[in-house]
Image 1 (tube, one colour):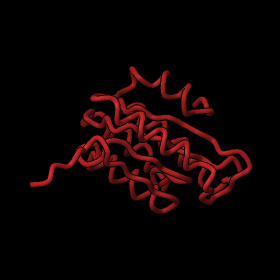
Image 2 (spheres, rainbow, N blue to C red):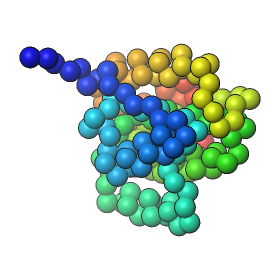
Image 3 (cartoon, helix red, strand yellow):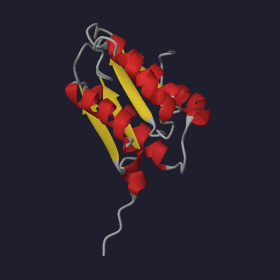
Image 4 (cartoon, rainbow, N blue to C red):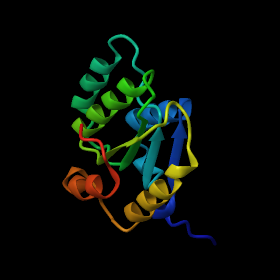
Length: 147
């Protein structure tokens, strides 16, 4: 009989994978499955009027508390605004969200961010419950973008 330590299960999505994770996180609360998640160069889909729909939905569902590390490429001009909107929307819901901007990176994955992601996952695994009250600590440790 195997036991799974749910505090060690995390999710990473890059580009469309980040959009998919953000959507799934928003509507299906991945906190039930994952201890934390990292969205790289993506966020909630920025289709016309959609962000206001997210905010309306938010009023009825305040249970989302999955810690999120959202990594934005400094030169990713096509997706930066949706990532920033995602940060705002998830924070409104009460989720712990850390924003990190990768200097000199566009819409791409870079191996140089792996230590940051690994450290974020390791650190979130040490806490039982994470929410906005822990955000200052996490933002200082992992974030470099004040939104």
